[in-house]
Amino acid sequence: MNIAHVDEIYADAFGSWISGLFSAIGGRNPGLSFDEHKGAFFDLLRRWLDEDKIRFCAPDDPLDGVWDAPADDIIQFLQDRWPAGATHENDPALNLYFYEMPALLWVDRSGKLYGS
Image (tube, rainbow, N blue to C red; front, side, top):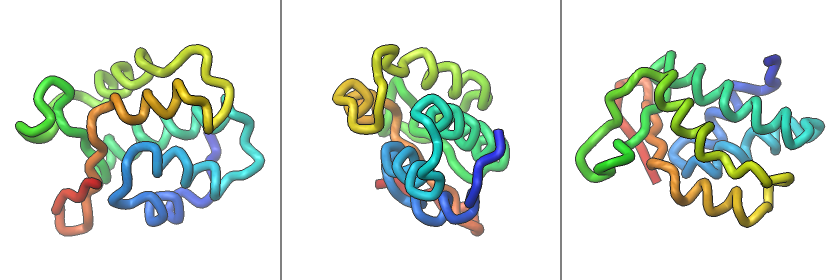
């Protein structure tokens, strides 16, 4: 998927919750449909997991460190829990989804992790 302003999205969302990333994508790409927005969201998550720009807290014990799993497993976990009936960014089911997902951790250039 061709996503505009990827570097700016990363900078805008750095340190924020996963919902902040979703919003930053829409803010930098206002012409995306909701389905395209969702696709861009998962595409960037996968890309940045592969590039070690983000990590997630472990879903079974978020206080015990970083989720040590392949990017495919993490993306599948997130996709499996996506609310099927969500139709727009402000959908209450989508809001709940963001709060129920493991915490997103951002990796700076020195390798230090940041979360909100």
